[in-house]
Length: 488
Ligand code: NAD
Picture: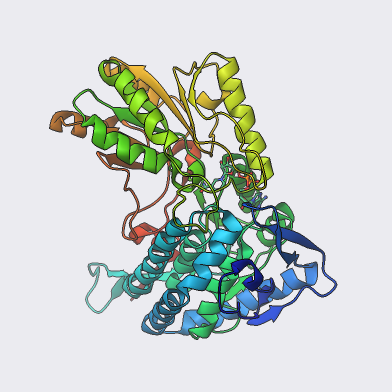
Protein backbone atom coordinates (compact mmCIF):
# COMPACT_ATOMS: atom_id res chain seq x y z
CA UNK A 1 0.00 0.00 0.00
CA UNK A 2 1.11 3.57 -0.43
CA UNK A 3 2.92 4.63 2.72
CA UNK A 4 1.14 7.35 4.64
CA UNK A 5 3.32 10.41 4.29
CA UNK A 6 5.01 11.88 7.34
CA UNK A 7 2.41 13.54 9.50
CA UNK A 8 2.76 17.23 10.11
CA UNK A 9 0.40 20.00 11.14
CA UNK A 10 -2.32 18.94 8.72
CA UNK A 11 -2.85 15.22 9.41
CA UNK A 12 -5.84 14.91 7.09
CA UNK A 13 -3.58 15.51 4.06
CA UNK A 14 -1.60 12.44 4.99
CA UNK A 15 -4.29 9.83 5.03
CA UNK A 16 -3.03 6.82 3.06
CA UNK A 17 -4.54 5.58 -0.18
CA UNK A 18 -7.17 2.96 0.63
CA UNK A 19 -6.58 -0.40 -1.00
CA UNK A 20 -7.35 -4.08 -0.71
CA UNK A 21 -4.57 -6.42 0.41
CA UNK A 22 -4.80 -9.80 -1.29
CA UNK A 23 -2.12 -12.44 -1.69
CA UNK A 24 0.56 -9.95 -0.67
CA UNK A 25 -0.53 -7.44 -3.30
CA UNK A 26 -1.91 -3.96 -2.64
CA UNK A 27 -4.88 -3.42 -4.94
CA UNK A 28 -6.05 0.10 -5.78
CA UNK A 29 -9.62 1.10 -6.52
CA UNK A 30 -9.43 1.06 -10.32
CA UNK A 31 -12.92 0.56 -11.69
CA UNK A 32 -14.24 -1.07 -8.51
CA UNK A 33 -17.26 0.22 -6.64
CA UNK A 34 -16.22 2.26 -3.62
CA UNK A 35 -17.44 4.26 -0.66
CA UNK A 36 -16.28 7.41 1.03
CA UNK A 37 -14.60 7.22 4.41
CA UNK A 38 -15.52 10.22 6.52
CA UNK A 39 -13.88 12.02 9.39
CA UNK A 40 -16.67 11.89 12.01
CA UNK A 41 -15.33 15.02 13.70
CA UNK A 42 -15.70 17.19 10.61
CA UNK A 43 -17.78 15.28 8.08
CA UNK A 44 -14.93 15.68 5.56
CA UNK A 45 -14.03 12.89 3.17
CA UNK A 46 -10.78 11.18 4.14
CA UNK A 47 -10.53 8.70 1.30
CA UNK A 48 -12.27 6.40 -1.15
CA UNK A 49 -12.49 2.78 -0.07
CA UNK A 50 -12.58 0.17 -2.86
CA UNK A 51 -15.05 -2.68 -2.52
CA UNK A 52 -13.77 -6.15 -3.30
CA UNK A 53 -15.25 -7.71 -6.42
CA UNK A 54 -16.21 -11.38 -6.63
CA UNK A 55 -12.86 -11.99 -8.34
CA UNK A 56 -11.02 -10.23 -5.50
CA UNK A 57 -12.86 -12.41 -2.98
CA UNK A 58 -12.01 -15.59 -4.88
CA UNK A 59 -8.37 -14.49 -5.00
CA UNK A 60 -8.41 -13.74 -1.28
CA UNK A 61 -9.84 -17.18 -0.52
CA UNK A 62 -7.32 -18.95 -2.76
CA UNK A 63 -4.50 -16.88 -1.25
CA UNK A 64 -5.67 -17.79 2.26
CA UNK A 65 -5.79 -21.47 1.33
CA UNK A 66 -2.22 -21.38 -0.01
CA UNK A 67 -1.11 -19.01 2.77
CA UNK A 68 -2.38 -21.49 5.34
CA UNK A 69 -0.30 -24.28 3.83
CA UNK A 70 2.83 -22.10 3.96
CA UNK A 71 2.25 -20.62 7.43
CA UNK A 72 1.28 -23.89 9.05
CA UNK A 73 4.60 -25.39 7.94
CA UNK A 74 6.57 -22.64 9.63
CA UNK A 75 7.94 -23.43 13.05
CA UNK A 76 6.05 -21.75 15.91
CA UNK A 77 9.31 -19.96 16.72
CA UNK A 78 9.42 -18.49 13.19
CA UNK A 79 5.82 -17.33 13.41
CA UNK A 80 6.55 -15.77 16.76
CA UNK A 81 9.43 -13.75 15.33
CA UNK A 82 7.18 -12.29 12.59
CA UNK A 83 4.45 -11.27 15.05
CA UNK A 84 6.97 -9.68 17.40
CA UNK A 85 8.56 -7.79 14.55
CA UNK A 86 5.15 -6.56 13.39
CA UNK A 87 4.45 -5.37 16.91
CA UNK A 88 7.76 -3.48 16.95
CA UNK A 89 6.92 -1.85 13.61
CA UNK A 90 3.50 -0.79 14.89
CA UNK A 91 5.25 0.89 17.84
CA UNK A 92 7.73 2.57 15.48
CA UNK A 93 4.89 3.86 13.32
CA UNK A 94 2.76 4.81 16.29
CA UNK A 95 2.33 8.46 15.45
CA UNK A 96 1.09 7.72 11.97
CA UNK A 97 -1.20 4.87 13.03
CA UNK A 98 -2.75 6.63 16.03
CA UNK A 99 -3.38 9.81 14.08
CA UNK A 100 -5.09 7.90 11.30
CA UNK A 101 -7.11 5.92 13.87
CA UNK A 102 -8.31 9.14 15.48
CA UNK A 103 -9.11 10.73 12.11
CA UNK A 104 -11.26 7.76 11.11
CA UNK A 105 -12.92 6.90 14.39
CA UNK A 106 -13.11 10.20 16.26
CA UNK A 107 -11.44 8.59 19.27
CA UNK A 108 -9.48 11.11 21.38
CA UNK A 109 -5.80 10.90 20.46
CA UNK A 110 -4.65 10.02 23.97
CA UNK A 111 -7.02 7.04 23.95
CA UNK A 112 -5.73 6.01 20.50
CA UNK A 113 -2.20 6.01 21.88
CA UNK A 114 -3.19 3.81 24.81
CA UNK A 115 -4.99 1.52 22.37
CA UNK A 116 -1.85 1.19 20.24
CA UNK A 117 0.16 0.07 23.25
CA UNK A 118 -2.55 -2.45 24.16
CA UNK A 119 -2.61 -3.72 20.58
CA UNK A 120 1.12 -4.36 20.45
CA UNK A 121 0.91 -6.24 23.74
CA UNK A 122 -1.87 -8.39 22.31
CA UNK A 123 0.29 -9.29 19.30
CA UNK A 124 3.21 -10.07 21.61
CA UNK A 125 0.97 -12.26 23.74
CA UNK A 126 -0.05 -14.32 20.72
CA UNK A 127 3.56 -14.39 19.49
CA UNK A 128 4.49 -16.05 22.77
CA UNK A 129 1.41 -18.17 23.29
CA UNK A 130 1.63 -19.63 19.78
CA UNK A 131 4.83 -21.34 20.88
CA UNK A 132 2.93 -23.07 23.66
CA UNK A 133 0.23 -24.85 21.66
CA UNK A 134 1.20 -28.04 23.44
CA UNK A 135 -0.48 -31.41 23.14
CA UNK A 136 -0.14 -34.27 25.63
CA UNK A 137 0.97 -37.88 25.80
CA UNK A 138 -1.52 -40.35 27.29
CA UNK A 139 -0.68 -43.28 29.54
CA UNK A 140 0.24 -46.39 27.57
CA UNK A 141 -2.26 -49.20 27.05
CA UNK A 142 0.42 -51.62 25.86
CA UNK A 143 4.22 -51.60 25.99
CA UNK A 144 5.66 -50.01 22.83
CA UNK A 145 2.42 -48.24 21.94
CA UNK A 146 1.90 -44.52 22.06
CA UNK A 147 -1.20 -42.35 22.23
CA UNK A 148 -0.96 -38.62 22.05
CA UNK A 149 -2.95 -35.47 21.46
CA UNK A 150 -1.73 -32.63 19.27
CA UNK A 151 -3.06 -29.15 18.62
CA UNK A 152 -3.07 -27.87 15.05
CA UNK A 153 -4.22 -24.61 13.48
CA UNK A 154 -7.87 -24.90 12.45
CA UNK A 155 -7.41 -23.45 8.93
CA UNK A 156 -8.19 -20.19 7.15
CA UNK A 157 -10.12 -17.79 9.39
CA UNK A 158 -12.73 -15.22 8.28
CA UNK A 159 -12.59 -12.30 10.70
CA UNK A 160 -14.93 -9.32 10.95
CA UNK A 161 -14.16 -6.36 13.17
CA UNK A 162 -16.01 -3.17 14.10
CA UNK A 163 -14.83 0.42 14.16
CA UNK A 164 -14.76 1.19 17.88
CA UNK A 165 -11.21 -0.13 18.45
CA UNK A 166 -9.62 0.44 15.03
CA UNK A 167 -6.26 -0.88 16.29
CA UNK A 168 -7.33 -3.21 19.09
CA UNK A 169 -9.84 -5.21 17.07
CA UNK A 170 -7.41 -5.93 14.19
CA UNK A 171 -4.70 -6.86 16.72
CA UNK A 172 -7.02 -9.43 18.29
CA UNK A 173 -8.20 -10.86 14.96
CA UNK A 174 -4.75 -11.01 13.36
CA UNK A 175 -2.99 -12.07 16.56
CA UNK A 176 -5.20 -15.07 17.33
CA UNK A 177 -5.31 -16.46 13.81
CA UNK A 178 -1.69 -15.85 12.82
CA UNK A 179 -0.34 -16.77 16.27
CA UNK A 180 -2.06 -20.15 16.04
CA UNK A 181 -0.66 -20.80 12.54
CA UNK A 182 -3.87 -20.02 10.61
CA UNK A 183 -4.25 -17.72 7.63
CA UNK A 184 -6.91 -15.02 7.65
CA UNK A 185 -9.29 -13.17 5.37
CA UNK A 186 -10.02 -10.08 7.39
CA UNK A 187 -12.77 -7.52 6.86
CA UNK A 188 -12.15 -4.59 9.16
CA UNK A 189 -14.86 -1.96 9.56
CA UNK A 190 -15.47 0.15 6.47
CA UNK A 191 -15.50 3.19 8.81
CA UNK A 192 -11.87 2.64 9.93
CA UNK A 193 -10.08 0.87 7.07
CA UNK A 194 -6.76 2.76 6.95
CA UNK A 195 -5.78 1.86 10.51
CA UNK A 196 -6.22 -1.84 9.77
CA UNK A 197 -4.33 -1.48 6.48
CA UNK A 198 -1.41 0.26 8.20
CA UNK A 199 -1.26 -2.63 10.66
CA UNK A 200 -1.43 -5.17 7.83
CA UNK A 201 1.49 -3.33 6.20
CA UNK A 202 3.49 -3.81 9.41
CA UNK A 203 2.75 -7.55 9.16
CA UNK A 204 3.96 -7.62 5.58
CA UNK A 205 7.09 -5.60 6.40
CA UNK A 206 7.78 -7.95 9.29
CA UNK A 207 8.08 -10.82 6.83
CA UNK A 208 4.61 -12.38 6.85
CA UNK A 209 4.43 -14.61 3.76
CA UNK A 210 2.04 -13.54 0.99
CA UNK A 211 -1.52 -14.77 1.37
CA UNK A 212 -1.35 -15.44 5.12
CA UNK A 213 -3.24 -12.22 5.78
CA UNK A 214 -5.72 -10.76 3.29
CA UNK A 215 -7.74 -7.60 3.93
CA UNK A 216 -10.96 -6.93 2.03
CA UNK A 217 -13.80 -4.42 2.23
CA UNK A 218 -17.28 -4.10 0.79
CA UNK A 219 -20.92 -4.32 1.79
CA UNK A 220 -20.54 -6.20 5.10
CA UNK A 221 -23.28 -8.80 4.61
CA UNK A 222 -22.18 -9.54 1.04
CA UNK A 223 -18.56 -10.08 2.08
CA UNK A 224 -19.46 -12.22 5.09
CA UNK A 225 -22.00 -14.30 3.18
CA UNK A 226 -19.45 -14.97 0.44
CA UNK A 227 -16.67 -15.94 2.81
CA UNK A 228 -18.83 -18.10 5.05
CA UNK A 229 -20.24 -20.02 2.07
CA UNK A 230 -16.73 -21.08 1.07
CA UNK A 231 -15.46 -24.49 2.16
CA UNK A 232 -12.00 -22.92 2.48
CA UNK A 233 -12.97 -20.99 5.63
CA UNK A 234 -12.77 -23.14 8.78
CA UNK A 235 -13.31 -20.56 11.50
CA UNK A 236 -15.10 -17.26 11.93
CA UNK A 237 -14.37 -14.56 14.47
CA UNK A 238 -16.83 -11.68 14.75
CA UNK A 239 -17.06 -8.63 16.97
CA UNK A 240 -20.20 -6.54 16.63
CA UNK A 241 -23.88 -6.43 17.44
CA UNK A 242 -26.04 -9.33 18.65
CA UNK A 243 -28.41 -9.37 15.62
CA UNK A 244 -25.53 -9.45 13.12
CA UNK A 245 -23.77 -12.09 15.23
CA UNK A 246 -26.85 -14.31 15.13
CA UNK A 247 -27.19 -14.01 11.36
CA UNK A 248 -23.48 -14.84 10.84
CA UNK A 249 -23.76 -17.90 13.08
CA UNK A 250 -26.59 -19.21 10.93
CA UNK A 251 -24.40 -18.83 7.84
CA UNK A 252 -21.46 -20.48 9.59
CA UNK A 253 -23.63 -23.45 10.55
CA UNK A 254 -24.03 -24.55 6.92
CA UNK A 255 -20.30 -25.27 6.63
CA UNK A 256 -19.87 -26.25 10.29
CA UNK A 257 -17.50 -23.31 10.71
CA UNK A 258 -16.28 -22.78 14.26
CA UNK A 259 -17.17 -19.41 15.73
CA UNK A 260 -15.96 -16.88 18.26
CA UNK A 261 -18.65 -14.27 18.83
CA UNK A 262 -17.86 -11.11 20.76
CA UNK A 263 -21.17 -9.27 20.80
CA UNK A 264 -22.80 -6.42 22.67
CA UNK A 265 -23.39 -5.78 26.34
CA UNK A 266 -25.37 -3.68 28.80
CA UNK A 267 -22.99 -3.69 31.76
CA UNK A 268 -24.44 -3.15 35.22
CA UNK A 269 -22.35 -1.37 37.88
CA UNK A 270 -23.42 -2.13 41.45
CA UNK A 271 -22.34 0.53 43.93
CA UNK A 272 -22.84 -0.47 47.58
CA UNK A 273 -23.20 1.84 50.54
CA UNK A 274 -19.72 1.02 51.88
CA UNK A 275 -17.91 2.00 48.65
CA UNK A 276 -15.62 5.05 48.50
CA UNK A 277 -18.07 7.21 46.54
CA UNK A 278 -15.57 9.87 45.43
CA UNK A 279 -13.14 7.27 44.08
CA UNK A 280 -15.91 5.30 42.35
CA UNK A 281 -17.29 8.44 40.74
CA UNK A 282 -13.94 9.42 39.26
CA UNK A 283 -13.36 5.97 37.78
CA UNK A 284 -16.98 5.60 36.65
CA UNK A 285 -17.20 8.81 34.65
CA UNK A 286 -13.88 8.13 32.92
CA UNK A 287 -14.94 4.55 32.10
CA UNK A 288 -18.43 5.54 30.94
CA UNK A 289 -17.34 8.20 28.49
CA UNK A 290 -14.24 6.43 27.17
CA UNK A 291 -14.57 6.48 23.39
CA UNK A 292 -17.93 8.23 23.85
CA UNK A 293 -19.41 5.10 25.42
CA UNK A 294 -18.89 3.19 22.17
CA UNK A 295 -17.33 0.25 23.96
CA UNK A 296 -18.90 -3.17 24.35
CA UNK A 297 -17.92 -3.35 28.04
CA UNK A 298 -18.90 0.25 28.72
CA UNK A 299 -20.56 0.65 32.15
CA UNK A 300 -24.20 1.35 31.33
CA UNK A 301 -26.61 0.78 34.25
CA UNK A 302 -25.29 2.24 37.51
CA UNK A 303 -27.29 0.60 40.30
CA UNK A 304 -26.56 2.58 43.44
CA UNK A 305 -27.57 1.85 47.02
CA UNK A 306 -30.39 4.23 48.04
CA UNK A 307 -28.41 5.63 50.99
CA UNK A 308 -25.78 7.15 48.64
CA UNK A 309 -27.95 7.59 45.54
CA UNK A 310 -28.47 11.39 45.65
CA UNK A 311 -24.80 12.05 46.35
CA UNK A 312 -23.79 9.69 43.53
CA UNK A 313 -26.13 11.26 40.96
CA UNK A 314 -25.00 14.76 41.87
CA UNK A 315 -21.30 13.85 41.75
CA UNK A 316 -21.68 11.92 38.50
CA UNK A 317 -23.51 14.83 36.88
CA UNK A 318 -20.92 17.38 38.00
CA UNK A 319 -18.01 15.32 36.64
CA UNK A 320 -19.87 14.62 33.40
CA UNK A 321 -20.43 18.33 32.84
CA UNK A 322 -16.66 18.85 33.09
CA UNK A 323 -15.90 16.49 30.16
CA UNK A 324 -14.26 18.36 27.31
CA UNK A 325 -15.86 17.36 24.02
CA UNK A 326 -14.30 18.42 20.74
CA UNK A 327 -11.62 17.85 18.10
CA UNK A 328 -10.26 14.40 18.99
CA UNK A 329 -6.78 15.32 17.74
CA UNK A 330 -6.59 17.94 20.50
CA UNK A 331 -5.04 16.31 23.56
CA UNK A 332 -7.15 18.49 25.86
CA UNK A 333 -10.38 16.85 24.75
CA UNK A 334 -11.49 13.63 26.36
CA UNK A 335 -14.49 12.92 24.14
CA UNK A 336 -14.82 13.14 20.37
CA UNK A 337 -17.76 12.60 18.02
CA UNK A 338 -19.82 9.44 17.61
CA UNK A 339 -18.70 7.26 14.72
CA UNK A 340 -21.34 8.51 12.30
CA UNK A 341 -24.59 10.37 11.95
CA UNK A 342 -26.55 7.09 12.06
CA UNK A 343 -25.26 6.38 15.57
CA UNK A 344 -26.01 9.96 16.68
CA UNK A 345 -29.60 9.59 15.53
CA UNK A 346 -29.87 6.23 17.32
CA UNK A 347 -28.53 7.72 20.58
CA UNK A 348 -30.83 10.74 20.32
CA UNK A 349 -33.84 8.48 19.82
CA UNK A 350 -33.09 6.16 22.71
CA UNK A 351 -32.42 9.06 25.12
CA UNK A 352 -35.53 10.97 24.02
CA UNK A 353 -37.56 7.81 24.57
CA UNK A 354 -36.23 7.45 28.14
CA UNK A 355 -37.08 11.06 28.97
CA UNK A 356 -40.57 10.68 27.49
CA UNK A 357 -41.08 7.56 29.61
CA UNK A 358 -40.27 9.55 32.77
CA UNK A 359 -36.49 9.38 33.31
CA UNK A 360 -34.81 12.42 34.87
CA UNK A 361 -32.38 14.13 32.51
CA UNK A 362 -29.55 15.32 34.77
CA UNK A 363 -27.31 16.65 32.02
CA UNK A 364 -26.83 16.42 28.26
CA UNK A 365 -29.56 14.90 26.13
CA UNK A 366 -28.94 16.73 22.85
CA UNK A 367 -26.72 16.68 19.77
CA UNK A 368 -23.98 19.32 19.63
CA UNK A 369 -24.57 21.82 16.84
CA UNK A 370 -22.03 22.25 14.05
CA UNK A 371 -19.88 19.96 11.97
CA UNK A 372 -19.30 16.36 13.02
CA UNK A 373 -21.51 13.84 14.81
CA UNK A 374 -20.99 15.13 18.36
CA UNK A 375 -23.47 14.42 21.15
CA UNK A 376 -23.49 15.76 24.70
CA UNK A 377 -22.31 13.45 27.49
CA UNK A 378 -25.61 12.52 29.12
CA UNK A 379 -26.78 11.37 32.54
CA UNK A 380 -30.23 9.89 33.13
CA UNK A 381 -31.52 8.86 36.56
CA UNK A 382 -34.58 7.03 37.85
CA UNK A 383 -35.08 5.44 34.46
CA UNK A 384 -38.19 3.21 34.29
CA UNK A 385 -38.06 -0.31 32.87
CA UNK A 386 -40.51 0.75 30.19
CA UNK A 387 -37.74 2.80 28.51
CA UNK A 388 -35.98 1.16 25.56
CA UNK A 389 -32.59 2.05 27.02
CA UNK A 390 -33.24 -0.33 29.92
CA UNK A 391 -33.28 -3.22 27.42
CA UNK A 392 -31.21 -2.17 24.39
CA UNK A 393 -27.47 -1.52 24.32
CA UNK A 394 -27.15 2.27 23.99
CA UNK A 395 -23.52 2.18 22.72
CA UNK A 396 -23.03 5.90 23.26
CA UNK A 397 -22.30 8.64 25.80
CA UNK A 398 -25.15 8.02 28.22
CA UNK A 399 -25.16 6.77 31.82
CA UNK A 400 -28.25 5.38 33.55
CA UNK A 401 -28.34 5.73 37.35
CA UNK A 402 -31.02 3.91 39.35
CA UNK A 403 -31.23 2.99 43.04
CA UNK A 404 -31.63 -0.27 44.99
CA UNK A 405 -31.95 -1.28 48.61
CA UNK A 406 -31.61 -5.06 48.69
CA UNK A 407 -28.69 -7.28 47.63
CA UNK A 408 -30.72 -9.98 45.88
CA UNK A 409 -32.98 -7.41 44.17
CA UNK A 410 -29.96 -5.70 42.64
CA UNK A 411 -28.48 -9.02 41.54
CA UNK A 412 -31.78 -9.83 39.80
CA UNK A 413 -31.76 -6.42 38.11
CA UNK A 414 -28.11 -6.83 37.05
CA UNK A 415 -28.87 -10.23 35.51
CA UNK A 416 -32.26 -9.25 34.05
CA UNK A 417 -31.15 -8.75 30.44
CA UNK A 418 -30.15 -11.38 27.89
CA UNK A 419 -26.69 -9.76 27.69
CA UNK A 420 -23.78 -11.14 29.75
CA UNK A 421 -20.58 -9.44 28.70
CA UNK A 422 -19.23 -7.32 31.58
CA UNK A 423 -20.45 -6.47 35.08
CA UNK A 424 -18.85 -4.30 37.74
CA UNK A 425 -19.34 -3.80 41.46
CA UNK A 426 -17.88 -1.55 44.11
CA UNK A 427 -17.90 -2.52 47.78
CA UNK A 428 -15.58 -2.73 50.78
CA UNK A 429 -17.12 -5.96 52.07
CA UNK A 430 -14.96 -9.04 51.44
CA UNK A 431 -17.93 -11.36 51.92
CA UNK A 432 -19.95 -9.46 49.36
CA UNK A 433 -17.06 -9.53 46.89
CA UNK A 434 -17.13 -13.33 46.84
CA UNK A 435 -20.90 -13.45 46.47
CA UNK A 436 -20.82 -10.96 43.60
CA UNK A 437 -18.30 -13.08 41.72
CA UNK A 438 -20.65 -16.05 42.09
CA UNK A 439 -23.94 -14.33 41.39
CA UNK A 440 -23.32 -11.92 38.51
CA UNK A 441 -23.99 -13.39 35.07
CA UNK A 442 -21.21 -12.03 32.87
CA UNK A 443 -18.12 -13.25 31.08
CA UNK A 444 -15.99 -10.59 32.76
CA UNK A 445 -16.50 -9.15 36.23
CA UNK A 446 -14.64 -6.16 37.64
CA UNK A 447 -14.81 -5.77 41.41
CA UNK A 448 -13.67 -2.37 42.63
CA UNK A 449 -12.18 -1.79 39.17
CA UNK A 450 -13.16 -1.22 35.55
CA UNK A 451 -9.96 -2.88 34.31
CA UNK A 452 -11.10 -6.21 32.90
CA UNK A 453 -8.90 -6.70 29.88
CA UNK A 454 -5.24 -7.65 29.70
CA UNK A 455 -3.72 -9.81 26.94
CA UNK A 456 -3.45 -12.85 29.22
CA UNK A 457 -7.10 -12.74 30.34
CA UNK A 458 -9.97 -14.21 28.29
CA UNK A 459 -12.18 -11.49 26.83
CA UNK A 460 -15.69 -12.62 25.97
CA UNK A 461 -19.28 -12.90 27.07
CA UNK A 462 -21.99 -15.36 27.96
CA UNK A 463 -25.72 -15.50 27.16
CA UNK A 464 -26.53 -13.35 24.08
CA UNK A 465 -23.24 -11.48 24.41
CA UNK A 466 -21.65 -14.36 22.56
CA UNK A 467 -19.34 -17.28 23.15
CA UNK A 468 -15.66 -18.02 23.00
CA UNK A 469 -12.93 -15.65 24.10
CA UNK A 470 -10.25 -13.54 22.57
CA UNK A 471 -6.85 -13.22 24.27
CA UNK A 472 -5.81 -15.43 27.14
CA UNK A 473 -4.91 -19.05 26.40
CA UNK A 474 -8.56 -19.38 25.33
CA UNK A 475 -8.00 -16.93 22.45
CA UNK A 476 -5.34 -19.14 20.92
CA UNK A 477 -7.24 -22.35 21.65
CA UNK A 478 -10.16 -20.97 19.60
CA UNK A 479 -7.98 -21.17 16.47
CA UNK A 480 -6.71 -24.70 17.13
CA UNK A 481 -8.16 -28.14 16.51
CA UNK A 482 -7.45 -31.19 18.61
CA UNK A 483 -6.08 -34.34 16.97
CA UNK A 484 -5.67 -37.69 18.74
CA UNK A 485 -3.03 -40.09 17.36
CA UNK A 486 -2.78 -43.71 18.47
CA UNK A 487 0.31 -45.75 17.50
CA UNK A 488 0.30 -49.49 18.21
P1 NAD B 1 -23.63 -2.71 12.80
O1 NAD B 1 -24.12 -3.94 13.46
O2 NAD B 1 -24.22 -2.31 11.50
O3 NAD B 1 -22.05 -2.79 12.58
C1 NAD B 1 -21.14 -3.15 13.59
C2 NAD B 1 -19.94 -3.76 12.88
O4 NAD B 1 -20.30 -5.00 12.33
C3 NAD B 1 -19.45 -2.89 11.72
O5 NAD B 1 -18.06 -2.82 11.75
C4 NAD B 1 -19.94 -3.60 10.47
O6 NAD B 1 -19.04 -3.46 9.40
C5 NAD B 1 -20.00 -5.04 10.93
N1 NAD B 1 -21.07 -5.76 10.24
C6 NAD B 1 -22.36 -5.39 10.14
N2 NAD B 1 -23.05 -6.31 9.45
C7 NAD B 1 -22.18 -7.28 9.11
C8 NAD B 1 -22.28 -8.50 8.40
N3 NAD B 1 -23.44 -8.95 7.92
N4 NAD B 1 -21.16 -9.23 8.24
C9 NAD B 1 -19.97 -8.84 8.73
N5 NAD B 1 -19.81 -7.69 9.42
C10 NAD B 1 -20.90 -6.94 9.62
O7 NAD B 1 -23.80 -1.56 13.84
P2 NAD B 1 -23.30 -0.06 13.91
O8 NAD B 1 -24.45 0.86 13.72
O9 NAD B 1 -22.05 0.19 13.16
O10 NAD B 1 -22.93 -0.12 15.44
C11 NAD B 1 -23.98 -0.21 16.37
C12 NAD B 1 -24.09 -1.46 17.12
O11 NAD B 1 -23.03 -2.37 16.85
C13 NAD B 1 -23.95 -1.13 18.57
O12 NAD B 1 -25.20 -0.88 19.11
C14 NAD B 1 -23.29 -2.32 19.17
O13 NAD B 1 -24.24 -3.21 19.66
C15 NAD B 1 -22.62 -2.99 18.03
N6 NAD B 1 -21.16 -2.89 18.11
C16 NAD B 1 -20.57 -3.72 18.97
C17 NAD B 1 -19.21 -3.66 19.09
C18 NAD B 1 -18.49 -4.55 20.06
O14 NAD B 1 -17.35 -4.26 20.39
N7 NAD B 1 -19.08 -5.66 20.47
C19 NAD B 1 -18.47 -2.77 18.32
C20 NAD B 1 -19.14 -1.93 17.43
C21 NAD B 1 -20.50 -2.02 17.33
